[in-house]
Length: 263
Image (cartoon, rainbow, N blue to C red; front, side, top):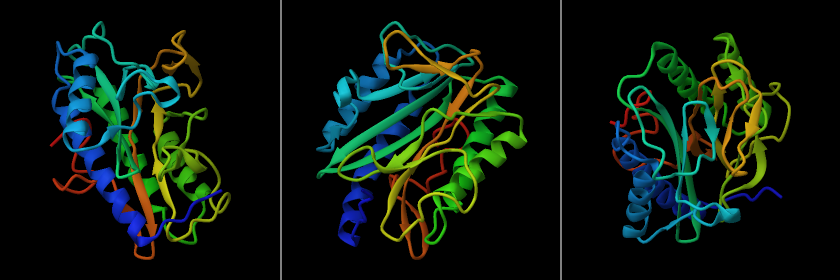
């Protein structure tokens, strides 16, 4: 069942989204050579708790950390570890979720560790633009397929693979609500978007093949061919005035973090 949010609900989701974006931005500032993903995880947990929130990912279906940190060919659900030390040229998808007042904020960004390769930078920039293209279609009267088609068209125009095994989703009191929001599809198809719906749009794009594999830890997903992958996400409210990005932290609009740089 799709849960339509009231104006009061949206205010609660804004506060949760602001905290999640703050945590994400601070995480990005610590994506530097020599830092472990475990250290970034602990930083994010501290920020969220300091602001009276709870890390939404910690313990979710048994997930053992407060962030997902997915490096290079890893697409999503990377488990932070003291043994994963970031190095020059890595790209790192960090996904943060914060629960505040019973509402969830969920967002992700792919950050550069030092100076990325040209192909890594271009992949990240196109994936970020796919997020923007999807958000533009999140208006009343459109369909879920309009979002997926916009993402898919842009990504495939550049020769990239669109991950098909993992989707965006509804957001509210629960982190994953209906509807699913695929990053592929046909315009005009799927669930019709209505004012009051809240969804996470999260393009996951690979340099080459869209095929995936899950590591033995049963969480971390990577590209089957080991090609680079990028991931960007924001939580969006469907309003009569157009899409409203709920994951903003007061330091600027949703795409103020250009490319893989936290500004």
